[in-house]
Length: 163
Image (cartoon, rainbow, N blue to C red; front, top):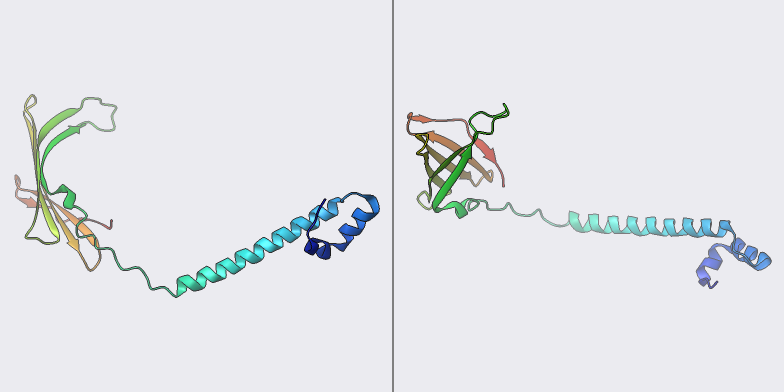
């Protein structure tokens, strides 16, 4: 069995044991494993120190401009919606609606408006919904507001999220 010179220097007792008996004992493998583990720990410590130093010197990434996150919705779309009126009671009676969804950007700003109108002629059901989405560049957050033009209401509660 060929060994590197540095291994013989690290473990002279293994070399002596090998020369006396012609066999490499289990203590040799144990010492070799310990040396490999120690070498790995030293390299990992060095890499961790190097990476920590390199990362600490970098400036934080600039905030991402999310003002165009919903631009893919802009336009006129056909809409198909399936609604389950009786939820959480084991019902399988779905109602299908068809209609249109129109999305427009407001005055080339960080806002868009959706008009959504669908109906089910068989059941004489009709849904109109309006949504206003606003983007705040200071907080990088979107807010969504639901409008009910049929009832003349504006729901003040808003959902806010970052994308």
